[in-house]
Amino acid sequence: MRGAFDVAIVGSGFAGSLLALVARRLGRSVVLLEKGSHPRFAIGESTSPLANLLLEELATRYGLPRIRPLAKWGSWRRAYPEVGCGLKRGFSFFHHAEGRPFADAPDRRDQLLVGASPNDEVADTHWYRPEFDHFLLKEAEEAGAQYVDRTTLSGVTREKDRWILTGERAGAGFTFEASFLVDASGRSGALHDALGVRRSVPLVPPTQGLFTHFEGVRRLDEMGVPGGPGIPPYPVDDAAVHHVFPGGWIWVLRFHNGVTSAGVAASDAFAETASLSLGETAWRRLLDRFPTIREQFEGARRTVPFVHSPRLAFRVDCAAGPGWALLPSAAAFADPLLSTGFPLALLGMHRLAEALEKDFGTPRFDTRLAAYGAITLEEADRAARLVAALYGALGDFPLFVELSKLYFAAAHFSESARRAGRPDLAGTFLCGSHPEFGPALDACCRAALAPRDARGRERLLADVARSVALVDLAGLLDTSRRNWFEAAANDMRRAFV
Ligand SMILES: Cc1cc2nc3c(=O)[nH]c(=O)nc-3n(C[C@H](O)[C@H](O)[C@H](O)COP(=O)(O)OP(=O)(O)OC[C@H]3O[C@@H](n4cnc5c(N)ncnc54)[C@H](O)[C@@H]3O)c2cc1C
Image 1: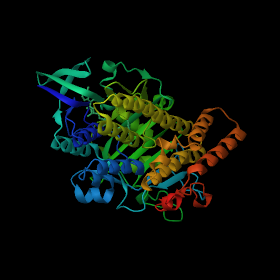
Image 2: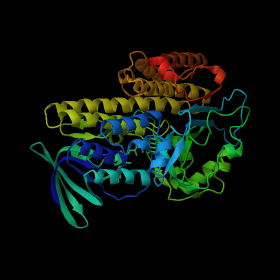
Image 3: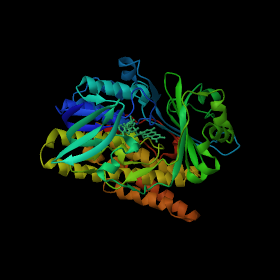
Image 4: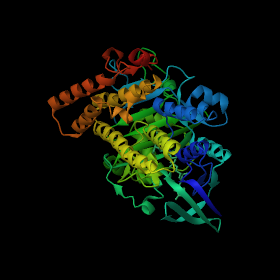
């Protein structure tokens, strides 16, 4: 197998295939190499309003009408009922104490519900990756990308502005050439060594993960959670459910096909005492410590083997160079906590697509790649700092709630600015380039990680509230809502138009 292409992409997860599709729409020839084959299990499933908006914008800008329906629950289910997905109306957090069932308190101090969409039709989704990624791959192939699966890549060299990729598939050798080389292999970092990229220290404390897919996971609302008076802003299970406890948290994401994704992410210290590396035994023991979560999983069966990840976070020292780029998901990862993986990946794809559209084949292309590399790491670090601050507050749930509002306020502001046609106001991820909020966010995250006494905690809470107020369009500081926040669909019009 031989061939010369404009773009070589290594890794056919959602991001590699989507970039291949966009590059084809821009008239570039593309080879897409995959070490495995589809369909396959992949983790990373929960979207956010910003992720879906970015997906929609990509589909509109690059003429991808078949991708557009995937940006909303309603249109996805009508267009592609055979492609698995889950309904995500918001972010549900429940705080648990060991040995005690979850109990409602009048001030709802042990819960946080943040609505993301006002109704099911326009709601976000969880991507059932075996089918979602396969769908995108078929779209890329249909658009003319040459896809080669089950590859073993053995050589990556650069000769006169061309990359030469060599390896084998089913006993036969291949040699592909390309001008632009993209590492879309996610955390595998398939090209790190060949590109001279080194792993550096991420800004999050060391954490581990243990996860799988289940059938038969109960709904919390059928178990009477959260309980108490009032109707929650959305059905709490049609969401990304976060069970938070000191040292870690468990996610529960339901798909409409009866499968539920669940797993735990925890600090090294917690993971060691819980022996997460033992897999299913550790999972059972963990649930035994939290009665309400145990009840939710009573009778549930796993459908694929447990995966233990001994280190969740990673970061590289460089994300792009002349003629090459790592997708954001191959450059860094902090934690699943805030579903930041997809928006970061999609922001990166927007930048690379624009570079391919406007400057491919000119000297400006490498200049754009250098800027892309810098911003990719800057955004990843910002997300990591916030995740680190939240991990530091896992044992102080009221503080965790207030710190998480930094994320919700920034994410909602960015989404609203983009919807109002003012992406300049949104700037980089988490409003990092907002002249006041960007530095304020960084300062709050640093302060959250510093030792403090009771007065220091009060000061931190006040600083967080001041920072949230700078971009808050969702009434996140309204204490009368007692930790239940509806999706504020029309706030952006009031704010920007
Ligand atoms: C536990 C966990 C939970 C997460 N949850 C969320 C979430 O809820 N929301 C969110 O936004 N993000 C989440 N993320 C992040 C999310 O998983 C990633 O952002 C996303 O999967 C990246 O997609 P991708 O297509 O870039 O990479 P991947 O999905 O990792 O795909 C990479 C592809 O490259 C292939 N590959 C690897 N090595 C080679 C090689 N040598 N040659 C050829 N091909 C190769 C692989 O087989 C694979 O098909 C989570 C991450 C983890 C670890």
